[in-house]
Amino acid sequence: MDRAELVELLSPEGLTLLDGLPDWDSKADIVKTVADLRKQGHPPTLVAAVLSQAKLRAKAAAKFGPFASRMLFTEAGLEQATRLKVAALHAGRFSRAGVHHIADLGCGIGGDALAMAAIDLEVTAAEADEVTAAIAAYNLTPFSHVRVLHEQAENVALGGIDGAWLDPARRTTAGGTTTRIADASAYSPSLDFAFGLGERMPVGVKLGPGTDRDVIPAEAEAQWVSVDGDLVELGVWFGAVARPGIRRAALVIRGDAAQELTADADSEDAPVGPLGEYVYEPDGAVIRARLIGDLARANGAWMLSSGIAYLTSDTAFDSPFARGFRVIERLPADERQLRQALAARGIGTLEIKKRGVDVDPAQLRTRLKLKGAASATIVLTREAGRHIALLVERL
Image (cartoon, one colour):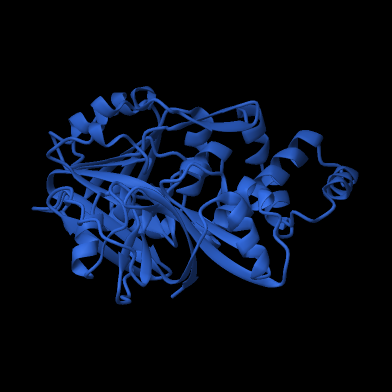
């Protein structure tokens, strides 16, 4: 979306048309919808803009719930935006730390600022991209204690501000395609700037969950967050918003419940042992936080193979930090023999879990030529370094 398209969208005609559209249906006849809107006299550029926003609003419901139906978005802004339930946790950290006026530097479409304002924090939000800043201002209009600036994060005056939140831009959009910035040194604002602020005031920095751990300052708290099984972010916390004695944390959110595993450092891996009656796949947040060893020791489990994030045990345990499977039987690891074994069991639908094995599950599923009415789950991994295939069932 460029500036002219945004101006048209923000016009009374544009907003009325957008809010009057039915809920987005990807199966609807879009050509007919466009034709109907054009017959009503709406210009083609406005029709394109409102339909794009309707599509983004539908997509945004997963992050913002019912609030999405009254917000505006950019493709890149929505991709990077924090889920509202996670943004509420960010805001709560600052509130508990006694922060009253927070700078949201690189606010995007305003998701985190929305959560901060909702608990009465004063917010100065800044966004370098003009269109995105205007969209943030629109989304934050209901809050009189929020100010949105079209400004580079590095240029925002911080006098009177006692905390900062930064979500450096990690995506770019060109030709309608949004791509990730692979090199952390190319983020905007830079990590040097973001982490430098942490030496002056309480600061939180949101990064991608796969960020190279070597960039995390030793004095910071690093918290990986997963939501309903999806690993969504790494939060790096400084000063009063970093919790004493915690340097590694895995926060697992499922539905309305949140559970956390914490430690003062990476945990040592558990010993390697033979396959037990059960196999466990740690949550992605636990894996990235390198707390697999602590999870294993707390539940009487051990590693199947060194460096591979599968645990095993002879007794079942229930944990929010891992998904469990009962081992039904070993299957041949050789692909031809595996195909024969699955055919003999009439398995036509197959879920493939894998770690430590160089295989593409989708391509393997095709090569296995599955036929039959039964469904099953297999785990492809290593046991003490050797390839194994396990037929399992979820606990």
